[in-house]
Length: 505
Image (cartoon, rainbow, N blue to C red; front, side):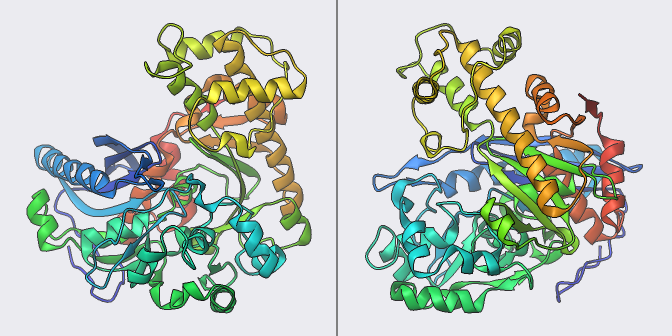
């Protein structure tokens, strides 16, 4: 394998079957996947899985980066062992994760504190205060982002001028989003990959560069953020070679000088690469997991007044594309209900253990249409006793409160399906695109009841799969950059179709 020092794609001449490692970090778990590219297909093998979740640090909810790092190293060691045993060659590593959250590094390159979790309450009310000084219209015209109360920009303001995190900001010399932070630990190089950077509120969606004017205005309103622009790293596009593994990581994992690529590091951006969308752009996608991201892929942003008022977001994708979408709360509500029913010490654990397959089968047998909840309500954002909050929302709607877990789950899934259908319709109207099908990828693509309800609510065929779209997209961007995969986005998606058993509802 020849490597490049200037960020250009290396030319891979593997002596063995090429394989790529996808480090895929989610808000509830992380995993390390080995993707073997052979015969126009990708076979994914899980080499490590580890728990993740916000930790109450005493001053708020944060992410345990050291725990994630330990799980990643274990997974890389396992991937190396598997590659040696099966005779494949690891030709690259790429990292993707959830968006928005970030770590702050001191001058010594070390974290000044664990990253804050977007679900922490310290951002409550911050966005409204910012909009009073810099209107939402001004933000949208530059960054194209939907309003979310916990965007990176608002997290930074929450820590400015003596707020929680202000001492850490004062000590920081660099801001790195979560996947960029892990990539830095792997390579020693500090960069920001654009698909994830586009979720911060601080990127110009038209130029794919940091929004210098907006940043200057923000610092002018909040002097505690002085030096913000200097703390932001160099931007890179998906497929860039960030660097080889450091000597320290090689020693810890047993791997050689494997190149680390900036992939589409926002997990949804990787998932959209791994979605078998048609070339003509007539299908919507739902990246279905803890959050559900519902939208269409476009060649450029939609920055109209109607788009802003509908709270649609323009996030960047590979090859100059834009992921035009809206966040829907997703399976978080159901997952939290199941967690509450399962946890021995929780108020809701007053029945038998929950078997998810049985719960969904029982929910399918329940009558639909009992009521529809606004699943994006702020009351569902935080963890803790979700069944009680769902019951309260149902009671407030005037509907009869279900007396079984299955009936409660059916209300949640009916509500999700209706929310999905509404966003799909709006996306097509605002983008001027006729949508003829919906592709559901991610873990939620396995939820047959939700897929069927979404097809019914939208009146469109729902194509489910792949469940591993994020890992596939991660691997395929690496393969293309290495020169061993198809060079077009359509070609990458053809590999996805060959590698996946799709199901239609």
